[in-house]
Length: 320
Image (cartoon, rainbow, N blue to C red):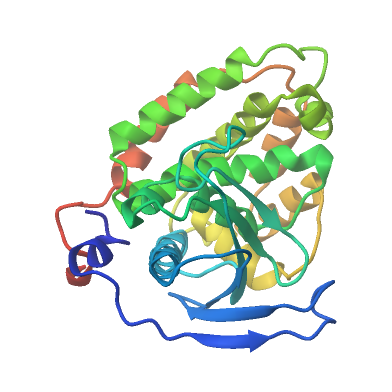
């Protein structure tokens, strides 16, 4: 039972402090009523888009509270003090949706920023907790939207951390995470129909060319390579020594709600807060690739990192 949700699954739903919040129409294109759900390091602003029973609402609140705890495992803070969460129910018999607890989601970049989750209300809490979607989508919020041509950076960061956060939470073991990365990188390598396009060119046409695997997992591989390089730095150097630390420093200086950026600008900002020129170098190299880079040596070098990030799943959350 992992560190984020052990208490929920072992003792049921905790008492939830809930407040209804009315946002003025200037905050969004259409004013909406939000339910405030306090979390580990901020507040979720819940927008219920559809009919949910009281029991289903409680399950989803418990899931969001757990997810909030897990997201704080990245560098100790949420990416935003307030995160909007829109919940849209879907029927499990819809052929265009999977039967998972969270069959689809997307980031909401209009203020307040957050995530729209399509959920299957009848699924139990454990199914939500063990679904990767929330860890992926909320990880997007640690950086601004980089534009279509550099969407591989945003999707790469989210794809990298969806696995790392599940590892830290104790949902997955280091071996399971390694195997998931290997399988995903293989899917990226098999996505080879667009060898005439660089990664930067392909990102802008990802939807049209259905090139999700190469775009997502090339980006994830870049962040894995960056994290390895950062952890090899001298801790006495004053430079950032983990990707977590880079994102923390970036969040403190540069992240604002509704902001946008570009790949080169984000790489320059990362180098400014981290020290050195690691990110600019990696950005140029990966953006120019015409196929998924060879991942095998990088993944092998990441194994100590994965071992260091694991949690003991036998220890209850409240005793950590």
